[in-house]
Image 1: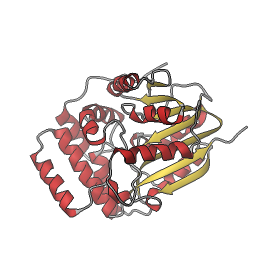
Image 2: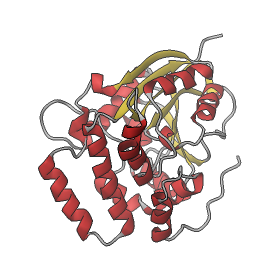
Image 3: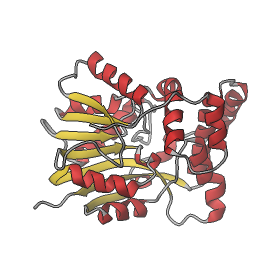
Image 4: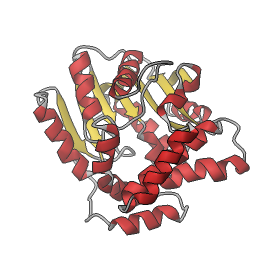
Length: 299
């Protein structure tokens, strides 16, 4: 099994400087950023590196992330003994939860060797070594044989892929006939104009090492172009209270801005700046999350 090589991590100041150029994030930049951000992501998000499915009332927290994972798994028919590939698995929290909660056999894939080691530790700590495994690899060149899986999932990872069309084609290849592709991801809203992209979408991309943000329509077209039958392509503002997961209230933003000014670590400062960028983009109606389900046709 071939795996991408990972060189020594860039200094934090170099990573931040590269992100601030405004150029589309390279694969190397994404990889180095996602090594340096690990302790901060664990502080902000725990082991589940994605936003949640938010209810209209009550506190927000880890239960929202687990609710999102259960929704995606249910939409794809993940069940006992199902062979699942989670692409862009981070440090393994989502893959472990899917295996534990559904009885599925899950493989997680990450291009980051530091994340890989931590994901394997997570599975071992939870006693899931027989049901969860993790590999190092690239979403555009999935290191698995044709027809290996019943379901391929993604949780806010595809936005970091430079060629999402290639990922969709690879997902189609590794799925068995009748298999399902399901996930959720960060998106720009439909009908964006340049005046909105600059202050909102471009800022989100530069603060989170994202090459580009597509739309619900763009994802659906990419999946269809890879051979999938689309079942669902939805802007999640239609089914949940998206703004509850982001920093949108003026008093909250002022508090976070003060924290950002007092923060000395460049990566932590960039993450806080990114959280503010997301909140502003949500408020402006520029940013959303999309949910997708697509089927590989049976023979």
